[in-house]
Amino acid sequence: MTSRSTSALRKPAAQRKAAPKKSAAKPAAKTKNGYKPAKLPEWNLADLYSGIDAPEVTRDLEKMDADCVAFETDYKGKLAEKTAEQGGGAWLAEAVRRYEAIDDLAGRLGSYAGLVHAGDSVDPAISKFYGDVSERLTNASVHLLFFGLELNRIDDAVIEGAMQTAALAHYRPWIEDLRKEKPYQLEDRVEQLFHEKSQSGYAAWNRLFDQTISALRFKVGAKELAIEPTLNFLQDRDGAKRKAAGQALAKTFKANERTFALITNTLAKDKEISDRWRGFQDVADSRHLNNRVEREVVDALVSSVRAAYPRLSHRYYQLKAGWFKKKKLAHWDRNAPLPFAATGSIAWPEAKNMVLTAYRGFSPEMASIAERFFNDRWIDAPVRPGKAPGAFSHPTTPSAHPYVLMNYQGKPRDVMTLAHELGHGVHQVLAAKNGALMAPTPLTLAETASVFGEMLTFKRLLAQTKSTKQRQALLAGKVEDMINTVVRQIAFYTFERKVHTERKNGELTAERLGEIWLSVQGESLGPAIDIRPGYENFWMYIPHFIHSPFYVYAYAFGDCLVNSLYAVYENAAEGFAERYLAMLAAGGTKHYSELLRPFGLDAKDPTFWDRGLSVIAGMIDELEGMG
Image (cartoon, rainbow, N blue to C red; front, side, top):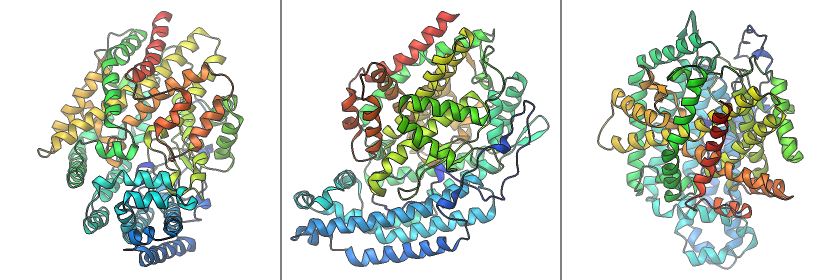
């Protein structure tokens, strides 16, 4: 993720990772049911660069270096004086335009390195390339560090006067956002030190986490598997395979707990140092600032969700245990396929058609944008050795286009993941017109587009389902997804808060981290989930804890917001789709409260979150009524 901050240049996007050399992957074997992962699409990164050794990479790195030095020479030490002069608005607008052009170029380089690395994080040549590009970006951006710092020192009246010039007024949203960070800025040389040492500090620990996770192997039966296919077994229809996978995860995590505890402790301490120097009062305040959301709004969300655990997750898992004719479900059975759910894998063409049909029913324009991801090879779908687990849509930079990474294995959840990531992708395409500085969207709204894409797909499938049992399975699947998006993510956020708060008093052992994990998981999952030994170390593989602390509440924010937004859509007259796409196209140019106003929604309303949560509770009511 790129924040609109004083640090300017984008580093390779570790938390949204990236793509492979064409020779890196061996095709996966055909499975029993005929599902062929090898036929899944792989992305074409040539729209960025043709390869890690491409001469264009060297050319652009050299151009970036030269442009950054020239920028510093032309503008450093001059912003306050020149902006206050006659014509200062036009002069500053040209400076911002040049700054944005450098940011776009850096975004292209950093995104390519990050995407290649996500596609194969164990290849030594790719790892070196990723590290080298990251270092070059950090070194070059030192020359730009002054710009945001000096810009924030310009007198309020002077900057307001300068923004009466149309060329600078275009950048008002970015400038106003930047100035919100003014209270947390440090002296220039300290900012430079923080910036330069990030490469040997948190960025290095992020990279260690990525490489360690990708290299882990889990023994399931006779096979040694990477983490993604092992996690996938937790959704297998065979209970013995789920148990074997759960135990394999626990065994390997246990063997590596000291490494992950060290990474977690180091990054929590690194963040505490930065927060203390900058003057942030709460452990999550820097994330709230980055998200442009008020602490009290997040606190209200968290309180509402935690209060709702009994009527959401506790109640649902009790129902699910009953469907399996058990009083409790082992933790590895939490995401088990329902006994009455349809069997078999969903082929990629079918998944593609499901999502695009749902999108088209809402807006032909939305479907047309999403279709480009398939036609133009912007998606990388197969599971491969060394590939990053999970899924993401990385926006790259406005002069290019987004890329989606998935690990598609034919599960119904994978279809919803495709709908989710394409929601991000559509959002990123629409927002790109705002340019490199104002296209990025705070997480509070970034997750809205993805969750809305999921909801469209779910509602479409539900409407087409005639069988009562399949309707029950669809509803239950959606409730599980919502619980994973809302309840689970708020439990994650609670875990992070406890860890970062306690870390201020000294290091936490792996055992202590496990105790905190079990306490928040027990609270959120409820009495119908039997947490067996080994689960205490499942905090280790969550990448958000490492790459973007406190990111996770944005999922719950987006899900609850979408529940309210979808209710408006279902009751709206003509024009909702146009208003919705306009909201996405605004990118980072408007505060979330301003973007929600046309829909009559206000996240500061104390009852707002409860309304969103009641949608989930209502679906559980319907499931209870089905028996």
